[in-house]
Image (cartoon, rainbow, N blue to C red):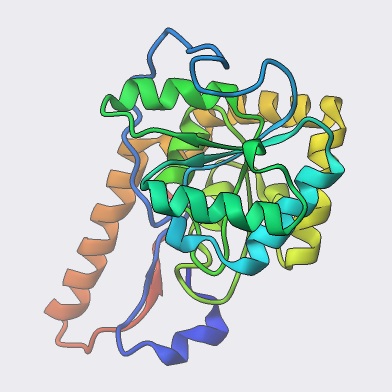
Length: 249
C-alpha cells in the first residue's frame, strides 16, 4: 500500500502485512440464482464492461478511456452503479459528447441483499477500476464473485488498493502502471475471448487457494503484528516500521 519511497511522508510507523491490508469474509454467500441480462437492463449480446465504484471516483481521464473502449468494441456496454438520476444523466450526456450512444451506459439500481448483488456480478465480463481513487470493497466483491478486475496503480494509498487485492489473489497481470497500459490490456481482454476465459478460470481457482480470501490467515498475521508491536513497546523502544513474516505454511 505504501511504496518504500513514499514512507517518508507518513508520521506513523508502518506495519506491512504479507499479502493484503484488507480483511475479507470467506463465508459471504452468493445467491445461487443469477439474474438474466434483460432483468439487469443489459443487452442480450455484447461485452459488458463493469464499474460499481461510486461515481465521484470517475474522472474525465478515466471516462475518456472507457468511451474509447466502447467505440472500439462493437455492441459493448458500460455497466455502472446507479445512484442518482442527475448523476446518471450527466454521465450519459458526457458519453454523447464523446460520440457514444448514451444508451450504452447501463445503471444498476441499489440491491439491498448482498448475496443478490454478488450474484449479478456474473453477468459482467471485466471490471474497470478507477484512478486515482481505486475500488476498495467493490473490488473484493467483484473478485469474490469471479469477475476479473483491471486496475492502474498510482503512488497514494487510495490508488493502490485494488493492486494490493490483485497481488494477494495471484493476478498481478491485472495491475497496470500507466493509463496507457490499462487501456491496452482492457482492449486485449475485450477482444480475445480465450485470454479472458483463461483469466476467469485462474481467478476461480485462486479465490479458493490464494491469501486474499483466507480470513483465518489474515487473522493470524494481524495478531502477529500486534504481538510484535507490543514486544517493541515492552522493551521500551520507540514505535518503528516492520514487515510481518508470512506464516501461511
